Length: 531
Image (cartoon, rainbow, N blue to C red; front, side, top):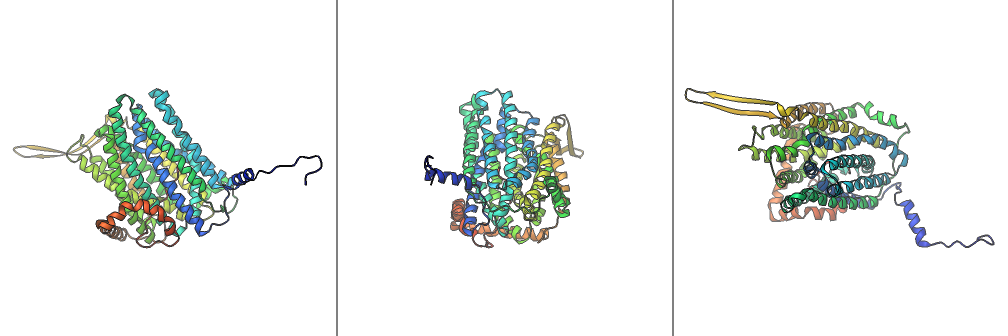
């Protein structure tokens, strides 16, 4: 009862319920039931689809093409490729924030929302800024986007480490990445044709077409955030209170994990020295239309989808290191083949080589994406996942960030230099000259990336993981799995199931997550970091 003379307090049940919901919506639970875990995994898959839609429409080919449309130089292209990995260095202070707040869902949702809002200035560039001003605004916005995303990644990695059962990491992320890749295939193809059609209809307003794509990606990103906000979070376990610098230093004192960091760092440096310039190479050096570049990208994505299941079976049966030992050399072979695409111009083997390269990249990246992420999650001790994964990301970010900057700075240096290797056949009646190798500009980086990639694979041998197998065993298992899948797809029923797969998997994902995966379901791409 209120005191005499004091007014009665009218309690609004609806208002009280809203306040309680605000206090508890981001609260972590001590433990999750099987039903909550299954529901959470379904939401993570749906978020993966929304996030993939955003990444497809706002990154990769379309972001590079937009920058080139604004008149960006090779140095700017390299800088745009370097900003996201360099921004991941912010995961170091993000460790402190996550450990202090201990509400990873709150950190992830807030940071993701701030990051995705940074696309609004990019969308408006063609409407209000000149090309020179637009390049500056693009660089600044991407830097802010990547910085906020780093905080999101730190919390998301640790969150997924505790949410997803460890014995089902491979099968779960295989399904998530397969569905995401299938969606990206459709979206990128439609977007590529849209851009080419837009340029034909409005040749003087080409940049506005990219703004439309970025707007659609932004909307998809907001949808992903709503799904993350509804995903349950188990209580965060932090072993010890050593402080920020002690937590950062601890993974580097673990010999085996330090070997893993050395491999991942050198691998990321090698790949990012060349990969950011693949699109530029095809658009400028070869002169392909963006729709053809997208079509080649889709070819790689199709191979991703086909081989995700097989790489997943290999990962679950043997180890992530075994997958890397086979998929890594395949990817390096694809980079080596880029040096022969032009000799020095377009010739009879240019297009067949481009097709072969994208097939190899699709097959190998499915395995690399699977194993490189899962091996870090698997080797990070429970209770210390945040600092271990952040340390791995730190090394990867430095390597992946420095490489494209060096590439962008030195590409003009190599523009005036050329390395030619020819074979000459002389006879009494004629002389034949065969150009077997002609390195110019970007081809030098492809060669450097190949050499550094071989070194990184050497570093992989020092990593110890339970279940390692010989490369021949892995290769035999991979081929067996692919043959089994292709036999299934070759029948009418199998083909129908393949076409329906993305939709049926979303509907039945929760049910399958409640039991161990069968041999036919075991597939496992690695967890991509949530943007």
